[in-house]
Length: 367
Ligand SMILES: [Zn+2]
Image (cartoon, rainbow, N blue to C red; front, top):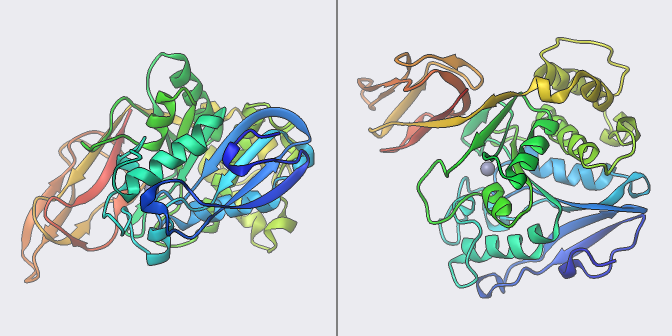
């Protein structure tokens, strides 16, 4: 079977490793990108999952690596295609937000341009070689190197079929917040991965967990569980309990703690029947009910360059008019009081003290 032409023949019932040269003149000298295909014994949907559109979101990258090692093709209907890192130049150079070759944020130029800059050619290749061949697309992110965040999923808002199916996948993923948006948050040449995929008719979400330049095991656990929840939602796994990354595969004694922490975030419970497989518990409990839907994403900026002193943390509730931090100069004088423009939840927060003029401080989700 050849569901994704650039990978050639895939053998049912096997996991295969590929080294892929993406098309595009600007990418001609790139190292090959690792891609893993997990081809089920039975036919079914094609799910494409990548991380590393932003090179410093390590929990997302580790999630894709972990899925490649733990998904059992014998138990899957359909095919899962996994790309751990798209933006390899940023990953190698530890560059946050952008690709160091053209200084462009790849997640602002989807669906890309085959004659554009490096990032535009890279996103064009991702959409046309992978996303358009999938029945569903999950783009995994997190806070980048200077960012902390509370786990959330983004998808396109709307009443059309693709948006409805995207939202159903977003709810199935099972993170605390689902944000539906109808236009890019930042003005830019293009759009984001999930919006471009939806434009192509492919239901799609962007899921975020982890951050601050670290590989955070709780975040990895959340994202792995989220992808498995999506596979169950798409009918790629016959029973929820048949496809769980076991503690054996995770290979350490922290597994139980991680699962408990994951459930605590996802369901609001402190602890519970820890022996019950997490995916079974979530499906029984109704993941959809656990996610709070937010419909507006308000980003807060500083006017002045300086030293950032946030008064809130990721996940905090903030009120319109509330002082949520200050920016000072290097003498210690306050330059600016940062006031929340809305009632909402702090979804991500810049945690590095050094901020530039018009620098991004946080994103607040609004119900
Ligand atoms: Zn990102």
